[in-house]
Structures are given as C-alpha cells and as structure tokens.
Image 1 (tube, rainbow, N blue to C red):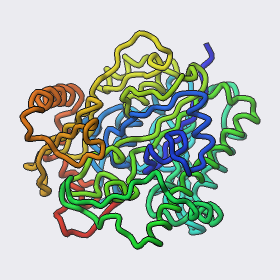
Image 2: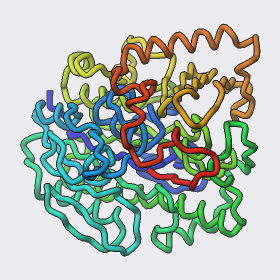
Image 3: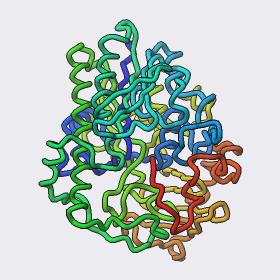
Length: 472
C-alpha cells in the first residue's frame, strides 16, 4: 500500500472556537471548513499541557510533560541557562525518517534549541520564536545557516514550504512537512491592513462578554476590560490572524493540487493550545490566572484531518484526543508500528484512525492535562483539578466543575458531598495515569524537575503582583 504524504499545520494560540469549522459565524476560514467537511473535525481535542513548549514537545515525542520534562515555555538555551528540552529523545521526524519519509520542519519549533536541527529532519527552517512581525528583520536558521528576511513571517514560511514541494523533495518517496505559523499569538495587531479592516466591522457575537471575578484563583493579569475601541481592535486582529493562516494554507494546498498529489496527502491542522479573547474576562491562556487555569477555552484545540485513509465523517467527532494521540495517528498513517513505538517511549498515545474508520476499538473516557504542579482529569462532564501547593509559591485549592450544569466553570463544587464519589474516581484515574506515563526525574510532582530553568519565572514561581510575563 502506498504511503501517504503527510502535511501538518500546527499553529500558535489558536482557540478551537475561532474558525468556521467550529461554528464561528464571522471568521472566514474556507480551508479549515473544507477539511472539516471532507474529513474529520474533533470537538473535544485537548492540549496535554496548555503552554507552547510543553505542548509541542508532546506532539513531537508522544510523551506527557511529566515524562519529556518540559513544563513551561522555554527561553532559547544559552550557556547560563541550558535546558535539555527534548534533545536526545526520539521524535516523530526520526520515526518517519526510519520509515522512508523525507522530513521538513518549517516555522516555529519552540521545543528547545532552534539553531541545531533535531535528528530526523532533512530540512530545518525555523526561528527563535517564529514571531509575527510586520516588515521587521527576522532571523531564520536553514540547516545551520542564519538567514534574514523582512516582511510577514507567514508569507516567507509559505514560500519556503512551496519551494520545498517544488525543488527539495524527491517525488519518488513520501514526505512529511511540518508548517508552524504563529499569527494567532499575541500581539494581534500585525496582520495585513485589508484583513484587519474587514474584521473591524464584526460584532464578535461568538465571544461572551464576561468579567473575571477571581473564581479560578487570583487574577494574574488585568482582566480583558479594555476600552471598547481597543477591545474591538484586538479582536479584529485575532480574527484576521486566523483568516491569514487559512489563506497561507490555501497556497500550500493549491500547490499540492497543482502537482496532482493532493489526494495522496494526509493533511492535519491543529494548535499547541487554546486561547481566550475575553472569555471569562481573561486574555491568553493558562497563565492568565494565578494559579493557572484549565478553562475549556484554554485547553481546547482545533483538530482537523483529511486525506487518504480518512473517511468523511457524518458529523463532528466527540471522543477526547490530544497531541500524544496525534503523534500515534501520524505513525499509524505512515505504516509505523504504533504499539512498538509507544511502548518503547512510554507514550499514552493511541491512533484515532480506527476510530474514524468505525472499527470496533475502545477509546479512553478520561482526558488528562497538566502544567507544572497542577493536573487535570476530565471525563467529559466532570473536570477535576489537583493542585500541589507545596510545590508552588502560588497557592490554590483543588477544583471540580460540572460542565453540564455549569458550562462556564464558575462554581467550584470540590467540597460538595454529592460529588465525593466522582472526585474519588477521577483522583484514582489521575494517579494511575501519571504513574504509568511519567518519568520520576521529570515529573511535575518532582521539585527538581520544576526547578530546571525554563524561562526565569515559571507560572508556579510567580507571586500575585509580580510583573506579567505572559509568553509562548
């Protein structure tokens, strides 16, 4: 059987709610919509750690943060503050390379040292952060050579992806190309003027107008209570960023079509984690509050997949999946033994290809998530959050939310006797899961693992009133 080409788009801070594929009434995202209509759209896809670096490390290794050891966003390494990140760990590209794939990394990496290519990559074209700057000089690394560009990052990333498809790959072998845009990362003020102008006329009716009351911990940043003109400008920029990404995806998909390999290519779109743009009165993600939150808009990610071997689904796919499962799914699509790899690297990931093909295979009923000394278990209705305040300067109590009765997660019912059995079940499941898949040296419950330098001021090290350091 012919192996499919694999094209992965993994973007930055793109909340699941922010595209037409997930019901947004104003964002124009035809490629994402096409993927949902002709393939599969997962409504309960979750980031295993809702921060850029640990989420990306899980995508590449198939491991949870408490195994790969990246617990917060990473400053690029230097001689003073090195972090091993995932160097030395097996990654998805190396598995695919062994399976006969050509591999290309284009765009944001942010899972450790971006200068030196990780094993398994034929093309390494990446930057410090993949920042979304307008007509500013930006430095990129291509296989060890530093290059400089002026202009919008998404345009020259797409140019490089198209050049790879036209000039660099061997048509006789399958390829895996990863493209990482960062447009949806703050600040949302740098898209093309026509797009932003278009969205200034929106009424943003899909975003609830809410005020943060501190119900999830101490407010870590100013609530999203901008002056109305500034609020609308920020939202217009975010909406424009999503459409801008979609436009660039169209250029690459069109190139596949022109080369007559579109139907030979599995295409996957996802994000590292979610994003809040006034939801709950907050901005950005998990580190928008102290202690950090696991709100639905923070943890939910878009996940769209279509191509060979992916039947068009009759409707949205509701099973809970995460980046570790996507790791396993890509291996499966490439003909790599999922069980052999996941058992060797201690990954909880499972391929969701059998699920999409309606094969009789069981699927998990509880999804887990973590950030530093904080962990989450959700069975679809009840979300339990366990906090190790003894490992953090930021104190917070455990939480339980009934998402059916309280979808906006405003009432912590952890102390209600009626939920005691459910809490016990989720606690036990959490302990079993992390015991099975964490590495003792890298566990988020190991103080030494949290003390390894990440960025100088990780979320569990910050006290209320400290300088805001929202990052990647």
